[in-house]
Image 1 (cartoon, rainbow, N blue to C red):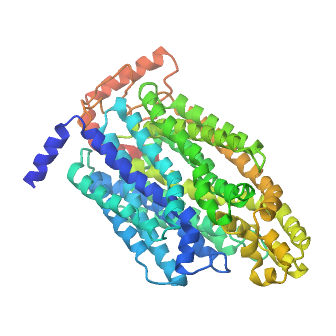
Image 2: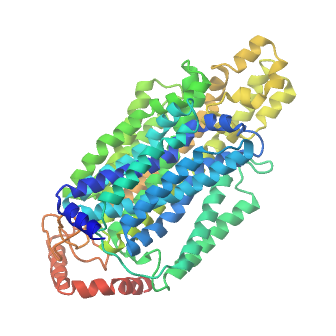
Length: 632
């Protein structure tokens, strides 16, 4: 114990300790987000490795859960783990997350089974791996905020946030490279990083934030988990066909899950307003910068979340085959051709974070959403068979816009939080973002299927019959739900070969069979219907980004909770009033816009100075006061 205490004192005394914190937490978040997307490209190799056809009837659910199970569990658990970090130590929870993530990365790769049992094993291990990912995501931002002073938090959180977003795109390339070599490598690649990160975090990271002793809110955790899981599961199954419908939104079970889940979440809100130590600090929404930042983040994630899937389908199902790439090679090249998007994030994120440290988040975050909306407009007007440089510039612009938004917005959210609520506040923010990603996938797929359903069946039926396919077989393929075509393109399969089947192909002349399964027939055939779906999906993304820009603009001027400037180790000079950065100690009311004139600013400073004398007493009473005001 004494050795660890001595090491803690030595580490915290070093001026570069905060950069150790940033390096380790960024490594953890990068690993977690890479693993969230690495399966998208490697899925064909994984399914071939365990001997199962994901497009066969009944297997679509397995495909969806393998993709989205990780996202669902992280969305549900981040708030609870953030709350536990506030209570028992953020670094402890973070270290546990690193270790859990690493253990289940190993277990994902050691399955000895084949077929459906093997996929079920992968789904369960993937969900449990998500528990570790949720621990990492919930506490990393709070640990960074504890370690960095106010005037460097934007840069630090920006680097961390951009690494996380970039990881979701880097995972595509890593999955494409490792999958063909061996599907188990897709999971094992995280193990060395996880072992190193776990040991490094245990030895070098220390809790510097304020703990808040409290009892665990069991009813809040239960109602939140049940309600959110029901909603997210309903969204997941809603994009599958039901009866004679192209999607499952009319399925009574899905409607029950969505409506029942929303009702349980309503009960959760009532529970949180009455318990002594709530899991979800609803009173934090009285802080305007926190509320506006999270609303903007939610809308941004809805606009961005389904984009990755749509771009992959666009490239793998249409563009790459039409430009000479075999269907088997398209997954890797889709990831490579999407690199401009990652480059935009990497360039804009750190720069915007550093600028927001001086000037606040509102202008940069709002401008970033406007730029993102423009990029979606650019993608909307592109032809399906585009010139690559125009597509690359649109992706770069989108990455720049999202990077301009992400770092300042996250810094604005974290700066608005009281020190002893940073874990739960960061968890709440991550929950909104992760839930929005699942919601976005459901919305984008639904919009794409709606667009395809109008013209694809007739187009596909006519095209197949024109090349000798029997009317019964052509009608069978044309009658398949459009989501089957989307999944085939997402997996990098030859859609016609997968959907028509070897029996029907064997009855055709060799020339017709070769043409139908070649690189020209399906991409050319689907281009028109796919363009209809793209138009609807991108129009929705434009609206989501513009509404996010409005929400961001309503956050007010720069606001930092009044915990002083700090020395970088979580030790702050209480009550410091920094006129240049407008650091005010008024967390108990929403911070007004700082552009309403000098008199309003002087009144804020006067009120802040009066509160400084009562800071210690107020901090002890903060949870009770916040809940009382929330009930009022």
